[in-house]
Amino acid sequence: MMADLRRPELASAPLSRSLTRPVHVGGVTVGGGAPVVVQSMCNTATSDADASLAQIETLMQAGCELIRLAVPHASALDGFAEVCRRSPLPVIADIHFDHRLAISAIEAGASAVRINPGNVGGWDRVDAVVDAARDAGVPLRIGVNAGSLDPALAARDDLSLEDKMVASAVSYVSHIHGRGFEDLVLSAKAHDVPTMVAVNRRLSTELPEVPLHLGVTEAGTPRQGTIKSSCGLGILLAEGIGDTIRVSLTAPPEDELPVAWGILQALGIRRRGPEIVSCPTCGRTEVDLVGLADQVTERLAGITAPISVAVMGCVVNGPGEAKDADLGVACGHGQGLLFANGEVVRKVPEEAIVDELMAEVARRYPEA
Image 1 (cartoon, rainbow, N blue to C red):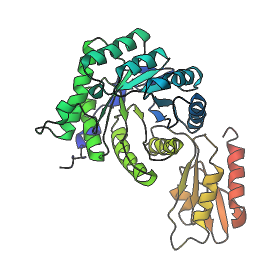
Image 2 (tube, helix red, strand yellow; image 1 turned 135 degrees about the vertical axis):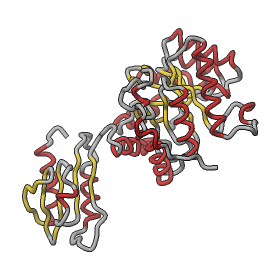
Image 3 (cartoon, rainbow, N blue to C red; image 1 turned 180 degrees about the vertical axis):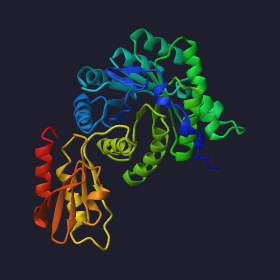
């Protein structure tokens, strides 16, 4: 049965982000009302420090704030340590199966470590990682994935997948809190959007003090992954749930960042880079609006300032419909009206629209 996404009572609920405990991952704060943090994961061989560092630089330029690297075996530890020493972003070690790798990653300089207690081989091994993290002052991210639950819990027929994931997460957090360790971030991911949403809603209620990392795992290729991530993350973030996010795409990791920031920007949570406001065209359109919008988008690609630029197809409703945009153009027959905050600035011929609009952006927003 599909989980019910309707939660009208949340309209008056307190924002969960304001209730979570702040966790410091290097110089980045997750939770405690801090801005929602955007992260990604390298797909380079961790043993190749130079390749990993080059990718981290690319991801940082695209808006990544935390970076995760897999440490699949001991031979990757030297490269991981080198990345930790030179990375401009805090580095999170991603560990599965071997708890000793988690301890070694902490010793190598990890800013945080991600483990799934269900696959490291028992509480004694989890406890060893917790003790090492406490001694080093390094936070842990506890990961619960629909596809890698503790075998005993996964085998139970009396529980739904949602129930299993929630029970697993609560059990892990309760055990680790019981050892006096509270520098935790929790993630509970599934490829099914309604399940992921339902699980994180419950966790935000049952563990309101624990910061949540949101993501739809195995979301798919760029088109499907963007849709699923936008739905799942968007629902939760709009309800005040979630302190850090990753958009997982079967694509180069730098493709994840525009989607993540786009979700945050569309919800009014954080802004990075321009927002293009453009209409879908209609029978009144008398210019190549799609081409104009594409050109403007391309010309604004290198700008990180949070400005809004409208490209509208007609002079009838253009300025009014985009009145909140910082700058824009409303097109007519062979010409366009440049406007700022809904007020007309001047008329320009069609062939000069993009250049004139970009010149206006540069003049009014030189810092962009």
